[in-house]
Image 1: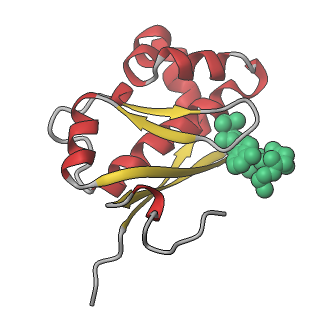
Image 2: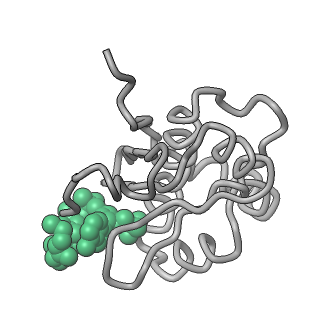
Image 3: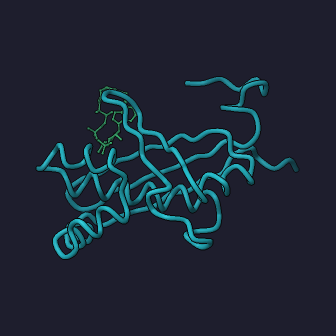
Length: 142
Ligand SMILES: CC(C)(COP(=O)(O)OP(=O)(O)OC[C@H]1O[C@@H](n2cnc3c(N)ncnc32)[C@H](O)[C@@H]1OP(=O)(O)O)[C@@H](O)C(=O)NCCC(=O)NCCS
């Protein structure tokens, strides 16, 4: 059987727990876990701030789950970044050790889906292996 050219990760984050971490450690927690761009996005919506942070927290865990190693090997939380175009689907960008790991596994692209409410945030991350976005495999993009 052929190995599928995809890696998949999913994660759930409790919004209340993220809210508590923000309350208890504010700058230290946020700067350790989130990039400037992520913080700017989440902080722009005070009403749902903790939800946006929880979704990004789940996204980072989901992406690392897809890579299969978790946070071992010295990967920093900020090396896995959720990019959010103003009116489009979020995606993942990696830097540093996370990027090196992804490249060593042959990852050529990511898709990310987020959902969040007052209680929980869920993220599902898919990485492509090999040809970028399945190009050359006859796969269609939707
Ligand atoms: C996209 C949409 C369906 C989100 O549904 P929702 O129930 O309001 O919100 P959810 O909690 O389930 O999801 C929120 C997340 O959806 C993601 N999202 C937003 N727009 C998106 C889009 N166009 N495509 C994919 N994901 C999107 C975001 O990551 C957002 O979280 P964030 O703001 O923290 O980054 C809704 O915003 C919508 O209808 N937008 C306009 C139409 C559209 O763009 N449709 C395309 C997808 S069907």
